[in-house]
Picture 1: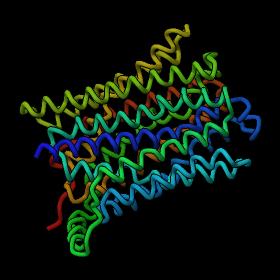
Picture 2 (picture 1 turned 90 degrees about the vertical axis):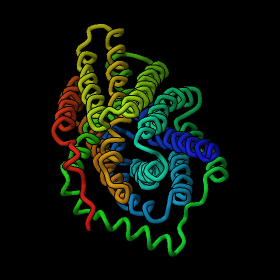
Picture 3 (picture 1 turned 45 degrees about the horizontal axis):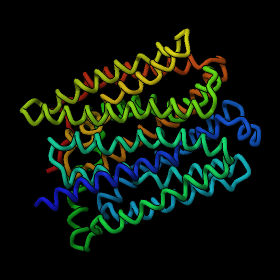
Picture 4 (picture 1 turned 90 degrees about the horizontal axis):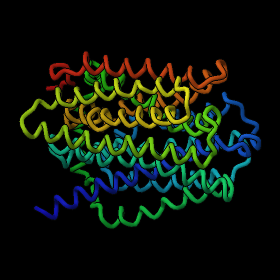
Amino acid sequence: METIRERRWLVVVLLALGLMISFVDRTSLSSALADRAFIREFGLNSIERGWLNSAFFWSYGLVQMPMGWLVDRYGVKWPYTICFTLWCGAAAATGMVGTLWALILMRLLIGVAEGVVVPATYRYLANNFAESEKGTALGIFSIGGKMGPALGAPIGAWIIVHHSWQAMFIATGLAGLVWLWPWLTQVKNDFPSQQELAERVQRAASVPLRNLLASPVVWGGLLNNFCYAYFNFYCMTWMPAYLVEQRGLSLEKSGLYTFFSFAGIAVVAALAGWAADRLIARGRDAVMVRKTFIVAGFIGATTVLLGAYAQTLEMALFWNVASLSLLGLVTANNLALCKLTLIPKPAVGLNTGLQQVATSLAGGVSASLSGWLLHTSGSYETPMKAIFIFLLLGAASTIILFRRQWAPKISG
C-alpha cells in the first residue's frame, strides 16, 4: 500500500514538472517581446505583440474539450507523451522562423499540443486522490504552472542578452525533452482494453455535456477560471514589457522580478491548498472552506491597482509581487472546487476541458485586449483597471454560484 501511495505522489510531481515545462515553452515569447532586437526584426507594434501573445490561447482553447474526451477514454500516459513531444519540437522550431506568420503558426501548434496537460492531470487526480488530498495535490501541481514563468522569464532573458532570441527558443524547447524518460519509466500504462474502453464510454455518457451546461456550478467555474486566468496570463505575457517600458528596468532585472511574482503565487498556492485540506480533514465543509480561500484571494489580488498608481519603483515592484502572490489563495482551491469537488467523477475530463476553454479564452483576451488598451491609452494603468474589474467579478461568482445543490446531475 505504501508503494502505491509513493507512486501516486511521484506522478503528481511529474505532472507538475510537465506543467512547468509547458509554461516555460508558452511564456518564453514574453521575454522575446520585451527585447528590442526581436521587435525590430519583425517590425511589431503593441497590437501585433498582443496578437502573437494571444495566438497560443486560441488553439489551446479550441482543443480543450476534445482533449478531455480523449483522456476520459484513452487514459493519461500515451496521449500526454505524444503531445509533450510535439509541443517541445514546435517550441524549439520557433527559433528557426523568420516571418510573423511563421511565428504565429508555431504558437498555434504549441497551443494544440499543450491542450492535453490539464485534462490529463485532473483525470489522474480524480482516479487516485480523496477529497482531503486534492488541495495538496493541486497545490503541488500548480507550483509547476507558476515556476514555469518564474524560471522561464529570467532564463529566457539571460539567453537572449548573452546569445540570441533564436538560441533561447531552441534551448528551452529541446531541454524539456529530458522529462520524457522518468515519465515513460515511472508511470504505468493506462491505455484501455476494448472492454475497459466500452465501460469508460458508458460512464462518461452518464453525465453528458447538456448536464454540465445546465449547472450553475459549471458556469461559476467558467467565470472564475476566466477571471483568475485573465490576471495570471496578463502577468505571463505583458509583465516583462511593463517592467522594462514603464518602470525602466533592464530585461534581465525584469526577468528577476517576474520570478519573484510567480514564485510568490506558487508558494501561496501550495500552502493554501494544504491548509484547506487540513480544515476539511478536521470536518469542515469542503465547499465553504474552499470558497473562503477563493474570495480572499480574488480580493487580495485587486492590490494590483496600488502597483499601477505607485509613485516609486520600490512600491510598484512590491505590489506587483504581492498582488499576484495573493492570487495564490485562489489557485488550488478554485481548481479543486470547480473541477473535482462539485463535479461527478465520470465527467471530470469533459468538464475540465470545458473549464479550460474559459481559461484559454482569458489568455487570448488578456493578451490582445491588454495590447489594444496599451496602444490606445499609452499607459499600462488602463490594462490593470480591466484586471481589477475581472477580479471583483470572480469573487462575486464564487459567492453566488458555487452551491452543492447546483452541481451537475448524473443521468439515470
